[in-house]
Length: 398
Ligand code: ZN
Ligand code: ZN
Image (cartoon, rainbow, N blue to C red; front, side, top):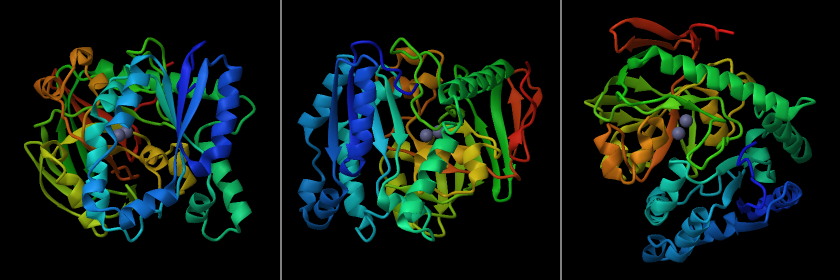
């Protein structure tokens, strides 16, 4: 599952130092599964914060190219990458957002070739989570520390469908469902989607060569992977210039250490013409002003409101979980794998030429609710309900 480690493959683990125990457990499991070598690159949130507080601006706007090149090199020699997340959502509280943006842009720029390999799945990667003390306190502020961590473990395992007697079997069943839903959507031949909900009246055209994708399918790397655990989404990309109307977010978003809430966007010919947020608007503006591509959407994802993350009612303060609670859209880069001819995409220009969006950023925001209705118009001009009251409009066949 996850990176789907192959015999004699190298594994690179990326994790905060607070995840040392999880990294050791994964390392043991990886060797037991036949890994050739397992190496962990630890980061440290405390050090990160000190840098944001004290480093001169010119240092913040530099990302070590040797590190980015090293990751690309590892990816090109076929290593798999596993990120273990679960840091302190408040680690960057009080840091001026423009300092965070400066450093994030530098990282995104330096990591562009690595990200391209990831987004086209020419490298096996996955993201999983394990509780850390600060994260558990944030999610369950009313529980004593030990109980909060236990509760977060339980929430992670439940939403990852790993709390039953046969987690691997449960994951396989889940993936079969996602794949069946993906095939149903691809069979509809959708030209555009119309979203309707309180504060939302949005039409999204899809490129002619779009395809819906979901976890667990075969990848350019040569075998199936699940890039996110948990995952509930079936997703594709919008036509860059084909988004019209207004959309309102329905859940808080914790992005790069900032909490953004109550977002509203107006789109004209695909571009964000107007936006606001009831809190975190400065952070949102920084994201949107990153480059031209961050004024456009790059992802359309469908998640029913009866998914386990959604029904848990928990705000995880972490996109891996929170985006999977709900239908979402993403500002910024599209995944080339969402195009049937995405294998030809070698550059941003290729992606743009096929109707996709390119950007240094990719920021998911949630728009699902029990009021959300989504109607598809097919290439034949027929209407097909996709979502009713926040759920799939039709049951899966078979
Ligand atoms: Zn998504
Ligand atoms: Zn996304």
